[in-house]
Image 1 (cartoon, rainbow, N blue to C red):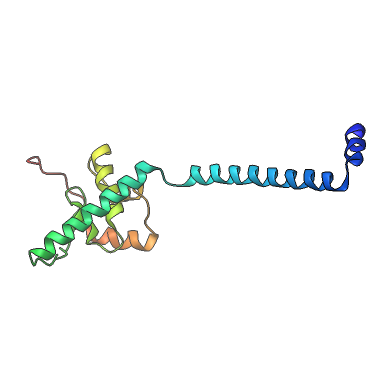
Image 2: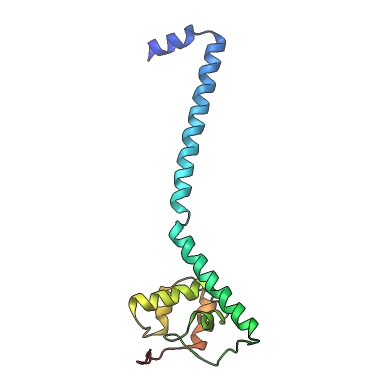
Length: 146
C-alpha cells in the first residue's frame, strides 16, 4: 500500500487530477449500471404490458360496440361473479379493465369462485371497495350449457 501511495505522490499534479477524474467517472458508471439493472428488475415485464394492453383494448372495443348500437349499459342489482364477462365487471365501481381481466384469468386457472372472499386473491382492492363489491356480487355455480 505504501508503494502505491509513494508512486501516486510521484505523479505530477495534472496526472493525479486525471486519475481522480477517471476514478470518479468509473464509480458513477458502475452506480448507473447497478441502478439500471435494479430498475429493470422492478419494471413490469413485456408479458405483463401485453396483458394490460389486451385488457384495455377489450374494454375499449366493448365500449365502442355499445356506443355504436346506442346501448347504455345497465347495472343489474347483483352480478354473478362466476359468469360475468369483462364488460359487466368493468361496469362496477372499483373494477377496471385490468382487474376484470385478472378476475376472468383467475376463474380460468382455478375454477369458479365458491366464496366472495376469494376475490381477494385477485388483489388490488381496498377494504372499502371490497365491502361495496361484496354487496353487489353473488356466487352461483356456472351453468353447464356454456
